[in-house]
Amino acid sequence: MRIGVIGAGSWGTTLANLLAKKGYDVRLWVYEADLAERMKASRINDLYLPDTELSEQLQPTSDLAFAAAEREALVLVSPSQVMRGVLEKLKPSLPHGALLISAAKGIENKTLLTMSEVIEDVLGPKGACSAAFLSGPSFAKEVAKEMPTAVTVASQAESIANKVQDLFSTEYFRVYTNNDVMGVELGGALKNVIALAAGVSDGLGFGHNSRAALITRGLAEIARLGEAKGAHPATLSGLAGMGDLVLTCTGDLSRNRTVGVELGRGRKLKEVLGAMRMVAEGVKTTLSAYQLAEKLNVSMPITEQMHAILYNDKDPHQAVYDLMLREPKAEGA
Image 1: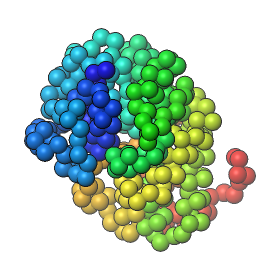
Image 2: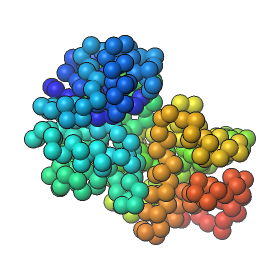
Image 3: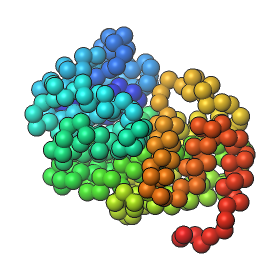
Image 4: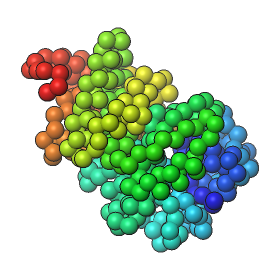
């Protein structure tokens, strides 16, 4: 199979290399033209995945149309907030019948759409129905080192999910199928918001009790919004929900948790993001999640406080105080 991977951050490069090592003909679209040339010469992505040698089957390119040309499958790994623009540029050169696989995690600002909804908005209902969505607990660096990892792929069509499962599965990368696209997408997007909050807690010097409470109550928030959007509860207790949530709230490789830690230590958001090369999706997803919860009348108190910290410069100590002193209620409420 001929595959195009769109986006050469750490995750896009890792997935492209995984597929190339399986023997597939892979083209990887690199936004930075100078990086693409260096990758061709050195066989290393020195910006985003510097410790991993790239397979000779992987062809970096800064030409988006060429990356998609005559490809039977396209893996979309651009940041969620630029996914629409990338799809619109891809649309004229999109191969007829190509399998689309989104590995982006986020909710678009302004429209409040998930990536499946963005794909449908740009490519029409047929494009969304023939797409698959890959998510689950997976740090790129660990997958690149071939550490055992399990993820989920969701699609409206079982045959497509099965095809993607076969495409990505290796002895170290196990892929489960699911038909709950919305649940898999929301789990992957919203866990980043809770990871920011977990990082803030750690940055403030709080302990394991605090983190456990945030993870558990964070999952309750995700489940409430998921229910309002038609997601299945079982999905959010699985790899794409609880699995990814635990990973990003506890792992030192989590960019979103790292941002939260620095905020908890008193640094300002602009300063923290300015020092980062890679995208922390949770920052912009927090805005979308907050607005979506308001629109659907869903209670998401952790998200509300994280929104206040990020967008209203609220003091993190005050945010924790306000969370703890909310009106008492039953756990299931």
